[in-house]
Image 1 (cartoon, rainbow, N blue to C red):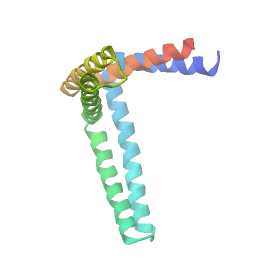
Image 2: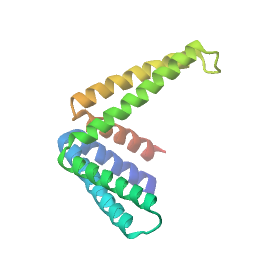
Image 3: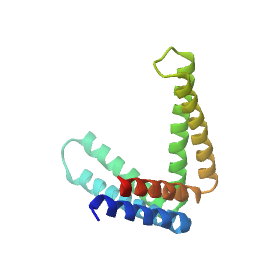
Image 4: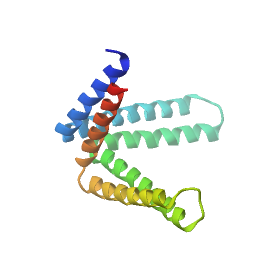
Length: 158
């Protein structure tokens, strides 16, 4: 078994874990991201005080570190933050796809009308996923699990 197949199998296993245990997966991911942001934020604040480059740059580093620290605590103690950001990204992607789909119909572009229609449909589906993900935080790990399984199968076959 080569490295690509091993990565594919690990991806499938993680995908199944995300689907079977969505609350555990969401909590785990949120905690890991939170701890990473917390550590990063604390280090930035420390370096902002220690580095004497310029007062403006040091202040900027300290502010970014403080924001990262606050976000770290948010992710650790508020598990739904990951689902919210996941849903927010789907809103953004869906909105952009709808705009590009409409532009494909209105403007004379090299993109075919069928492609514009598909982009528009996938944009609407993306917004539906965003609404359901924000409304029910367990959808985010299930969607991630499905993606991991698909990616694992593709990696194992290719």
